[in-house]
Image (cartoon, rainbow, N blue to C red; front, side, top):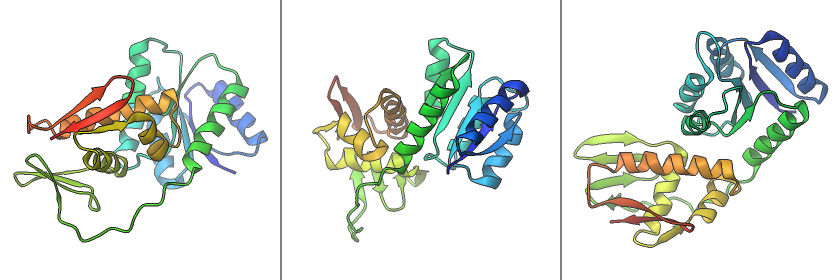
Length: 230
């Protein structure tokens, strides 16, 4: 069964959630603050992180941002009483996959955990064997997909696996529309609302990486997808 890293500083709630998960067969690693949770993440390599947002030492948003520097695959779910739209958006921008508002039912929590785990376990599409083709030219940039590296005037930007795969697909469909639903199915496993928000964040990151060449743009095609204009 999957291992859940649960980080919740409200001890009574944390114990209830931990016991409920263990009764259903999950292995639970429990921490009461963000710093302890981050240490457990590196030690235990859990399958999913479930973290409160407002915690001492390191809050949930900072925890997620730190995890995403080295791992953009593990599902992260936030638990919080903060319900303003800006907080929800920030959570997704920092790498969260789901956002459950307190108070919540334990049944809903478990359903959401199982959905995130199932999504992660979906088989990836088979990639063609890499070929010794030259670097891809995107305006003034040189893009090396196997090394996940974007270079401009000697300056290198290392991309995450998902960023590189998204940019490669945009390049292959350059000056044409890359359909949003296709990307979500291939790279995220389904086209749910939460994955859609995550895709929007990745597009924003790629725009930032490519901003130094005004001749290169990633534009939204409303309701359909994106187009890389070179």
